[in-house]
Length: 307
Length: 258
Image (cartoon, rainbow over all chains, first blue to last red; front, side, top):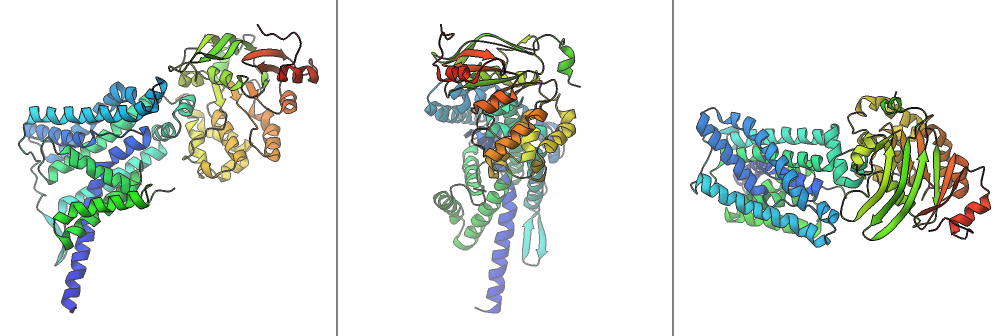
C-alpha cells in the first residue's frame, strides 16, 4: 500500500465516522420519544414514525402560510405536539395500557396486544389522514443549509445541517436527561415507571404523569420531524421506515434510556455510513439491520445498558 | 407546623374506620373492621400471614378502592373527612403515609431521589430541606449514600429509605407494613430504637409486626387479626400475653367470630 492509498483510506474512514456520528444525533432525536414511551409506560408506540411526519407537515404548512424563516416553525409545532401527545395518552392510551388491562382484570395478553393494536390503528389513521390533507406529493422545508458543508481540511468536510442537528440533538437530549433527573416531574416519571402503585402512594397521579411523558415524547418527535423536513423530502407514508430506524436505535442503546438513544444513534449512523462507503449504498440498510440483529442476539439489553 | 393538625380539634379522632370490609373479587379479605385512633396513638396490628393485616393498610392507603379486582365497603375517616373512595394520591395528601410491605422502593432511583419522590406533593416541597435533614439525622448512613442506587443496598438500609420516603410527606398518620421483616437482628434493634423519634410527638402510627413482644413493647394499643377479623384488642399492659397468643393462633374461647 502506498502512502497515498493509506491517506485516502484514512480520509474515507474519518469521513465515515464523522458524518455517521453527525447522522447519529438526528437518529437519536428521531428515536428518543419511542424510548421514553417504552421506558416509562412499557408502551410500544407503533404510530411514532407517523407522528414525525405529521410534525414535518405541520412545519411545512406553517412556513408556507407565514413565510417566516424555517427555525420559527418548531416554536409553534413543538407545544402543539406536546398537547396532542398529552391528550392522546390521557384520552386513549391510558385506557388500553398494560396497567389498564390489569386494572380491568383482563388477561395479560390484552395488556400486551391492546396498545400495539391501538397504536397500529393510529398509525394507519395518521398516514391516510395525511394523504387526504396533504396529497401524495413529496414535501420539504426549503432552506439554504441543505447543500452547504463545513470544510475541516482539504478532503474532510461535514454537512452544515447535520452538524447543526447533532449539536441541537446533544443539547436537547442533555436537557431532557437533566429534566428527568433533577425536576419533581421528571423524578415522578421515573418513579411511576418503576412502580406505578407506590408512586400513587407518594401522591403522584400516574395518569397525568404518563400523559406528560407522552407529550414530551411527541414534542421531541416534532423536532425530529422538523429535521426530517429540513434534510430531505417526505411523503405521508414515510413514517414506517423511521419507526424501524427508531426501533434499531432503541435496541442498540438500551430500552428506555435518553443517553442510550444518543449512543445507539451514533453507532447506527457510523455503521451505516461506513458500510455505504466500502460496500455501496445498498449495504447501508443491510449493515444497520445486521448490527441490530447481532445486538439482539448477543446483548439484548443494549450495547451500553447498565445491567 | 402541620396545616392538617391545626384543622383538627384536639379531641376528635385522627382516623376512624367503621365496619370496613375489603374484597378481592368475591373473596372477602377483611371483614367489619372498626378502629378509632387519637393523636399520639401507636396501634400494633398482630396476626398470622393471611390474616388481612396488609389488606387493611392497603385499604387505608386507597389501594383497594380503584380497579375491577378489589373494592371496599364501610367508611374511613381521616381528620373527619370520608376518604374511602379517594385515590391513593389524595389520601397521602390528606396526611396518611404508608411504608409498604417489601419496601417497594423505586429500585433504579438513588437514595435521594427516592426520598424526594416521597415529597412530590406541592404541599411537601417547601419543607424538603427540613425533612431531608430529619431523615439524615435519623439514619446518618443514608446521608453518605444519598447518590447510591437503592437496589445496591442491604435490606436494612432499604428499609431506612422506605421509612424516610414516607416521612418526607410530613404525615400525621404513618403506617408500617412489616417493619422488621427480612432484616438482621442488629438492624431491627436500630430501627426500633429510632421508632420513638420516627413517630414524632403527636403523630399517629400503625405498625404491622411479626415479632409479638417487640410490637407490644412499642405500641399504646394493639389488635389481633384472624381470618380478616379483629378478634382481640386492647392496651398492651391490660391483656396478658397468653390471651394474645391464643387470639393470634385462633384458639381463643368465645371469640368475636360471627
